[in-house]
Length: 301
Length: 308
Image (cartoon, rainbow over all chains, first blue to last red):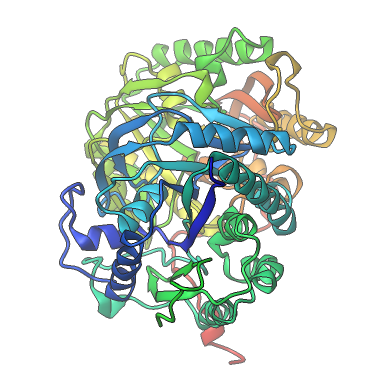
């Protein structure tokens, strides 16, 4: 069996607004559009994915929050409606998700062997979180690839941003080992924003783009700083500075997604592909990817 | 319309699913279940016509969300404790009160909205409380969220808005807060028989808070909220808010007959079932360290004013 590999890593934020703005048939509400800078960036990254040979998407989501270890989806299929608890007016999405349980179990076992507290999720009534759904829909709206969702352990809340970083690093290494042993080609997805301070009010028309802007300039400066570092391939430096950024901007990387993905990919020192940046209800959202294949790596924006 | 709302009981219960799904796996979880059952019986003996729930496991960002679906139906599964089982539910909500509560919030400067969507994910804490305290949907209910960014002033105004709506509609109300005391759980899976409060410090603080509850000193607990948050609350949100909301909703005083029906560990967190019955006597008003507030004026934009 050929050695498995990570063929792409994606930073894929999950504000439900972008799915709402797309008006897919699975989503009940109707919109007049909005957040085009993000959506068009997503469209381009989705086109790139169409040209990549891969077997599965593995996503770490901060909206499946677990305090007792790290959990993995462990059933073949989840059919349900996902209603966003924060923005139910925007996101009521009917989904039919297929899971690569074999790979999920392999990652679970590798993580457990490395000392990480783990759990397989086997309850058929479980509702897959909207972070997973939004990121995966925007990257692959045909839903023709199985996924694995990994929960976000809340080490930041219980311990510190630094402990979160250490634990996510260990999880990334275990996931990489499991993928290599599986023989599969895998796309990793860190589903989260950068700065993450929201407005606490909403415009009467949520997609009214005259009302959309970053929450404050400090958040914007941090977001740009980190994106510049991504462009330069300074991912070790990004991970090193992440605890400070989380402290300053409430960055959603607190859930461990970026650290996990960078660790699994061997801490890339090559430039990230930047596909877009835009605020959503005040939060800072960047779409980026890391392509280990130098021949297909692009300068996008 | 009466001036003062009629609140017949206040109840403080934990959000964890163990007393509902696994009361037989641990003696303490079983005692919490028994306490829930006692509370349920006492609620049934009242003539309450509304159960208003404030749940710390329903976070909101866009202001304050109020459940207004007249008959929400779904099957809920907890993110962490999914292996304990599923929680199918069908509840009866008081949509009229929800709308009135929303209007009262707006009149006091709060951003609020009702939610009424099929499949909306009602949170673990609310599901557990409603299934155990109101299993036959005898009393129409309403649930209000806990805004992640809100702090003391906003929570107190939210409580006062809840009272405004009760008075306007002439409701007799059971007020339910769903929250842990200390909320640090074990970060690993444990054998149910090994459950205990996470640390001696958490246990000592919990017992001190329970003394206050037992004496009916709800307003004093509200005044201690910031200390409680600093001492025994994991920093998931900015503050320990449930006591602020509960005290404001129930009238900002200490005149209750308090009873702690159970106090046990729930995967390390402090879980208590507490009943507060409004009384004539009580400990009386104590020192108020912070200003009372009637109207929420929003963020004060301190960076846009003063020195800059």
